[in-house]
Image (cartoon, rainbow over all chains, first blue to last red; front, side, top):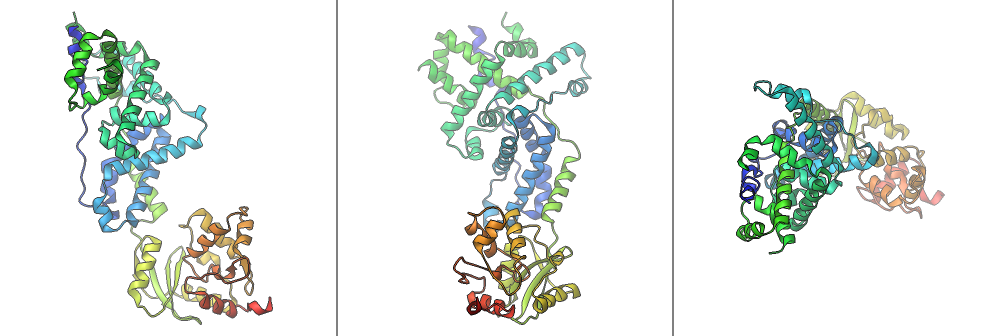
Amino acid sequence: MSALAAPFIGDHYRVTAPATVSHPVPGPETFESIVDDYQRRLYGFALRMTGNREDAEEIVQDAFVRAYRALAKMDPQQRAELRLQPWLYTITLNVTRNRLRSKRPTNVALDSLADPDALLNETQEGPDQPEHIVDRAADMVLVEQALLQLPMHLRAAATLRFIEGRSHPEIAEILNQPIGTVKSHVHRAVRILRRILGPQVGRIVQNDRPAAAEEEE
Amino acid sequence: MRCSDVERLWDEMREGVEPQREHVLAHLRGCPECQEIYRENEGIAYCLTCLPLVVPPQSLVPKILDHIKATVKIAAPDSIATVESPIGRLYVAFRHTGITAVALDRGEGDEPVLAKLQRRLGRGLILSQAPQWVTDTVAAFFRTHRTDLEKVDISELSPFDQSALRAAATIPPGEVRSYGWIAEKLGQPTAARAVGRAMARNPVLLLYPCHRVVDATGALHQYAYGVEIKARILALEGYHPARR
């Protein structure tokens, strides 16, 4: 069972949390730089949550308007104590929830976010065969769609944990839930994804990590 | 250490701070089923982290800022000026879209009044002179007890507050209606209390005549500056409770 020791146990692709951007004190005056710093992250989050670019754009716009309004009403003390990043995630999630709730569930759009063209462009440098790249794009579409099949609260937990790379306590703060609940949601999300993606997971990992596959020999 | 524990601890271990790590590893070495789950879980986590980074369109930042400007009117404080009236000096806040607030001067000085209005409007106020259209709008109200609503901007209020105030504006001068009457008009007959709160929040006193809204028994109920002022304004409009 040498294959177990490495590379499948956490260390190799442990989730890394990007450093938190810190602002002096958030407020309407510094709002433009807040938008600059967080729009990518929140857009990515909204896109993973909705699977739809148009929705994601509107959600982010809405979320920033709400944030701006809320900041304008805070007094200096509240602003100084505000933890901007989790707070912005929370607002984005609330807007997403409202939006998805008002849509028919069957409307959960399935835009392919993993754009094969974009992937081609990204990796044009290397000697990769286009065929391999298209396969990978198709695999990523499978993963995206599996994520979109999760119930909202599990999708939020899984997205924050694995895609946004947030820690359990951070997710607990964002979702306003006890850490135990967060852990169990993450866990349930993974279990469902395992059921949906099944054997394809192994293939994706193998295709992606030829080096690791060889090691097992 | 049972299989279910191991499955539960998997994600915590990925954080690299789990003290039970050794126990989990020991269990895994002896349990092929958990190994399988482990491998699959790691596979799922890996697949998710592999999803391509999504990049928002370049137009997103300007769109967001425009959106904020459009809905919040960023960095554009209202002007505020004092205007004399039959019930005393009024503070009138305004911008090019219309009058946004009216407050009665009760002799406490500019500072507290401005602070209160700024909080209510959620934006700054600059003390200035009243332009002609502002004094005219106020003068017209005291002359005719009607308001040209084109000159008043309540667009930043909640939709409910806006429609409640618009309904109040249909009450003819010299008459009063109940909170319930407005609720009926809005098609929400049970919302009388919400109407009461909307009236209490009315930033544009007089011009949107929340003073013409009273409780079901006809009692004046409440007013921002006390029921005596409410009664005085109603009297100016020709309403006398005794004549009802």
